[in-house]
Image (tube, rainbow over all chains, first blue to last red; front, side, top):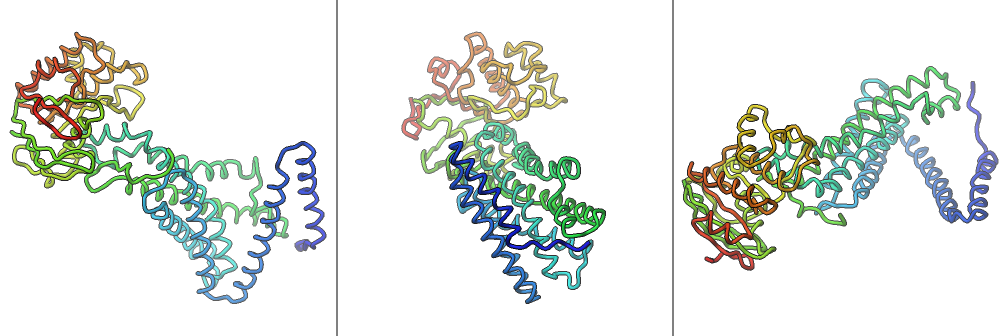
Length: 265
Length: 199
């Protein structure tokens, strides 16, 4: 089966649904029409730009260009992870988000590229960039939820953490319940994704491959591989952000340092 | 064994200089917000501080923070709880000793079978004291230990503290009750604007 190529007119017909949404928003006074218009416009511009950038980078076939794209993607995701919690670390949430997002994404992506997918060369941009993009999505979710769990929850947990410190317990033990709770929360999106896959939803990658003409069973293999990678990346990101933030909120004398937090409680 | 504090300070309070010998109790009175609780937290090394603190000649800076806090037990006015049930906050091996202390502090026999949310403020306060005492610290830092207690329970806490003092424990007690300070303490100090002065 050959993929059915989409023409601008096909996209214009689909865009009529957004126009209908906008009309309904005006008619029902939902106040969403401006937001819909901006969001849809931004989405078209962003994806079109990405399409052309990727086409250019694929044509270059240069490890440096691929690395630069991956670096930009990681930095944008790290910014999002840092920005989500309402409370910030003095010095910036970047202290936690950059190493965690970069570490989780690079480890998971390289692992998949050199073991399961094995393109030649292993950093082939056709495989490396989309793979990093998909993994970053999950890493972003897990990292931001887990980081928010620590930064937004530690003030409320001060009494329980310090109760253990007062009894001579190590900071890792004292802050352990909050860290574990934050990691569990960070893992919820990917767990839901795996549970729902195939029953409640057909995952986007698999659907895209089937629409592009790939055999459904082959598409499923790719989806299963990706789900495992997303699970691995999410777990690393949730653990990294939680322990990273927890370690920055304690000091060498095993004190809880809430003075290192800023922003609204 | 002597608790020695020299030049203890942070950005808000101090410097403090204090020596408390084994078996002696120092009470600190003073207005709310004057820095009493902060002082106890600094001695326990829970807040950032400067200065020299030692116990029986052992410099605090040379001891790990957890090891220091096992020797210097702080009981805050409102103890914290990390679990749902009372039982999970007490070592199963020390349950008999905990039950004896609970009985001495007029707590009901079934207290260890309860959930934390079922406890009154006074029950929580006394359980916090028991939890700290089970670690057998050399120093007890008590922040308003009877602030939520009726007179009978207050006398029970004071009797238990006297028992520990006779066993050689060093105690610093923050209280708003000057009569209690007179009953318990060998020295009473007043905290005013972040400095300690004789009453």
